[in-house]
Length: 537
Image (tube, rainbow, N blue to C red; front, side, top):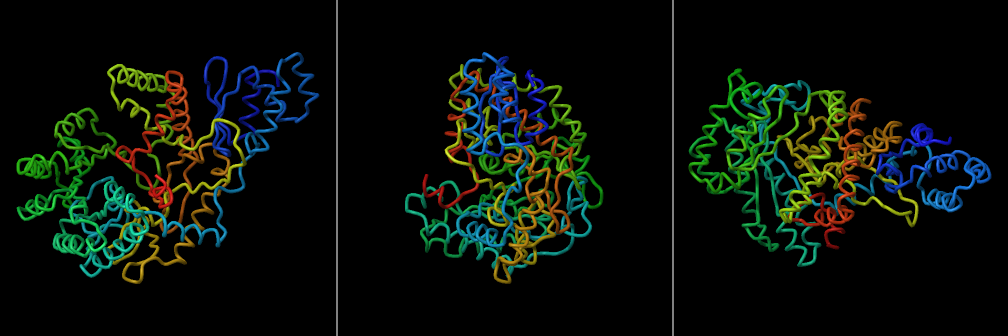
């Protein structure tokens, strides 16, 4: 094993948790997922490292690489790293413990310490649209379009549950952190569907209760309370207009671009196009209150297969309100054409990285204080070490947010679902029956852990950065793992980002600390809120 290429082949065959990318013509950047660590190896040293890892025979290494200066230092460094859990061969036994006591402790910790940031009420399962890509349109067994409507007693129970969870977290905080929480994570509920306008009476009644159920007793001002409505805006009366202008909710409106593109998928239950009506109603809001339109309307645009992306952006970007462009989530799988996207990375990677770097340089030259925003895709690098760890890392990779705690949707009958993305096949309690069902929670956490503790996940160098969460893996009450090609795409995406980091580091070695400093700024980035971490801010 005397060449770089032979060494790389050895690593690829025996060290599945290690990924290497070129750092410069003379060295490689090594990422070790087991230790969550990055470091640099000179190309000339790589065969030495590989041979010593293979044989652990110092004499043989000296014989194979005679007269190499510093070879004993290289060997000592390898021994030290391996003692700390770095550069170990093979896969890991498991990503996360599924022992009942460990699972129960994790759930109890999450319920006590994780803020419920997203709380959604499924006001109705009824919808006046039959969007061709909508999972509720395509599903026939679990969560799909029915006439089921949430009643006010169920909504009241749900709001009471949310209020209790929020206040339990809030009351434990110090006074300065209470103020910080209300600024960045105030009480917030969402009205979801189906289509909420088809149960508008419930939306009004539940809003009134939510806003007037005694938050001020705990020092939470009325003007801190927020809520949202997800709507297709097809039904929009003068009463509804008056309501939103009076209460000023965050209004999520679904629109996929110009008439030709929108009406390709977003059709009524009778098969008619929807653009004309939705666009007209949007303009009514803009005409009535342009400030509300620009600050409180968020257009949700699914960039569906076959749509003209340039035409879509031209129209929606002209509105003057925030736009969220969403990837189409195919029904029945995680990725539509993973092989095609992998090919796209292979063919366009260099140009993509160059464009990103040039944009950063340009913004720096213009003294743009937010130039670092060009690299927010590298947030996943947080926590990665760049020197030999002090101790072995305790591996615990959950591959999801805290199930049914950080994010939750209450179904029309009070069922507690992981979030609005799931198929509704695995409720973990019911707000009308006391809230969480601990045994269901334990069973769900354990079975998810057992599913993700599979051989492919345990031997994947991208294990710490996988974005295929539990909500996407739930299928008919059971967890599923991605297909091999989907995992290949996940790894290809992370490989691209590692290469982007290398390119960014070369022009600015302080890029990572700058990026992590930005990530700590709650005005710019918000993620899971853990009580202990939040109190320590």
